[in-house]
Length: 280
Image 1 (tube, rainbow, N blue to C red):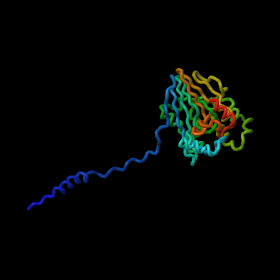
Image 2: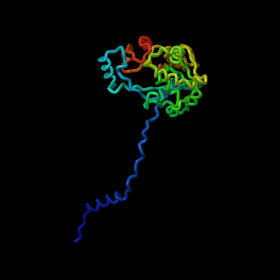
Image 3: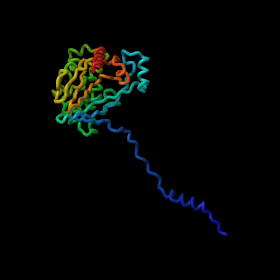
Image 4: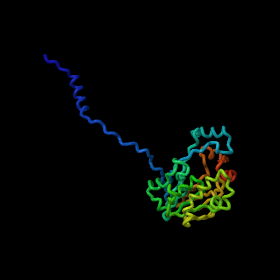
């Protein structure tokens, strides 16, 4: 008597193709890189590209003129975790006017650690070459805005650019007679400010202006003193639209929009910085 095992036959038919499948190849190594950091928008006939340089972490105790309990309440309301410092983005802006390719601020390079220094990479990712930038506007000379002017080897990151900074800012950080008055705790910042512009200064590519001056067609400089003596914003206008790139008017969105009277220890003149923020 012949016996059949239909269930076993079905199982064998299922397993045979599986046995023929070769072992999977090893997957490629993880890339370990992020997506490019830029965001593009139109302003009339201008093109504006926000560029991500990286981030820093601000200690909450650096914020002044605000009670600790109020500070914590504002952080909670905005879902901000301050336990490891408040993460704050460092950005720059690339503006194509049709006649000029302008960079507003240059990021921090590697002056403040490995979490920054992505401006030139993101300029390229956005479709431009750093060598095409003809003008760099500096809101001020703090390291996270100016040190990205240099490559890691100390050469200019934007070799064809003229760098523009407010005359009050240049006088405070670059004039040897004035810099002797800068406190000891700011000496490292002073050294970085001088180094960041030195190659441009040496070839005559560092220029100053008076805040309020019209610098190029569709570009007005705006005095925003307080954070530093020559802190300046840049107002771009095209096709009936305007945008103000305002630098460090605000350091903590979760606190200073709700309480503009809150300042930060980095402000050279906290009272004036608060007045500037309230005005804007």
